[in-house]
Length: 349
Image 1 (cartoon, rainbow, N blue to C red):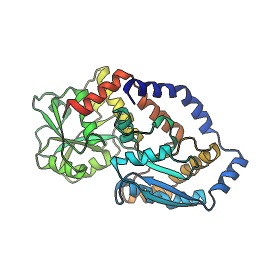
Image 2: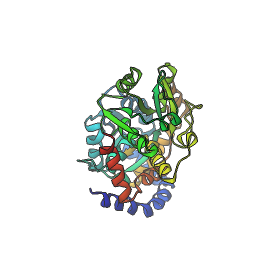
Image 3: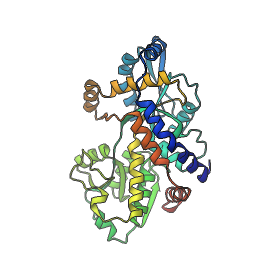
Image 4: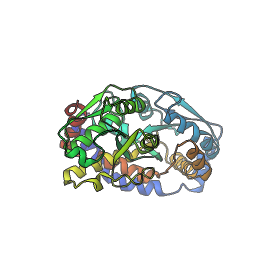
């Protein structure tokens, strides 16, 4: 999908967004609810995870599954389909039979970036997915080693030294988040894609091999609490609940409208977070039933408390607002998309 076509697809979805909000906001009629409940009774529903067992997405899915099982009256299993950072799995969901028995816990940020970057083999369109809601989403935080010389945005803006960022692949947050931050602040940077994940990348920063890393705020808070890292700034307009004393980038320095666009764009991507979807064109009664069951599960105090014990925080956002966030992410011009591609894939390598 080329850049202009991508932009047209997203803009074409805008008129439908309001209609979606109205439709999604209407509860199923009693007859429809009964029909959907009858359909799910005794069925097996899969929550697909695009990563291997043991990771964060797998843990979230396995935490949610037994609660969703009760709400649906079905057997709910978690199926790991690792490959290409979740790309293979979301492609399968996008093209699967739309019967409402296949769900996926998607890395919405990475999926949005991959689609915007026109990544090869993308076969899905986020604007056409059926959303059940966001499970959790975190602002991302720029961090440096606790013993580093530069610890504030002003320190970096006043330095001519190249800021070396630890990355772990062309997309996925560590690398693309770093590149967008560098572009927005007009910093001399190099994103080094040489690490296997956030922990390995963070160690490179703590050892002094790299200068900076960007991660979710919950991960950043762990590094800060360990005494190994200092949080420079939160990427977005709201402070992190885990790092309330860390200023947002909007507070840390005066930004031009173009700089604000970059940070708002990035924050919208991050706001997609861990998002639960089902196949496009799922029958309306089943979709409404799934959405209501998801809301019941993700707003349940017992589940929320269960997640907090293991730092798996649940901050439910309904399908209407989720759709709005997804649409706003993709509502960029062809020229803006070209800039994003150049910044993420070329400029800071």
